[in-house]
Image (cartoon, rainbow, N blue to C red; front, side, top):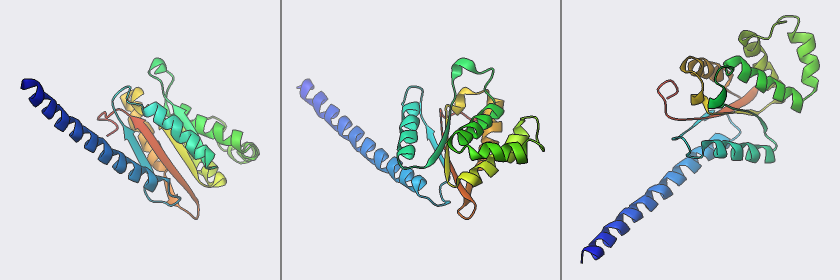
Length: 188
């Protein structure tokens, strides 16, 4: 008799879990579809979850999906293994280099227009350059995975920079950013 009661309770709990996952999937899919639209709304998408939940796999799949739709996508995957060299300048430099690789004409522009003004590659110089690069490529997505793996001070600094890069002006360019991380106070 106890077995039957346990099985009935287990069935109810399992049914609740299935319903929760079904509703969560619909909510996430709806948010993702809104983020994907080529307009200025919903420019930031935050994917948060516990370690091992699949955030990196989701970001990788998102990059493949965006590339299959011919959307400019630039990415940066942070790693807890090398926190000494990870900083906002490295991330911004990575975005700039990826843009140049996809559009080699940008190298001439940077050489002629940017280097005379900013001969040293600094965070400030990159924050002046990246919006211009994004304007030249049109619409872009900047995928940042593992932001929580940076030092807390760098997390805050990088979020400031990323928020400045968001653009919802279709007449200039659209820049949307998905960020994945654990739910940590400096990010949330």
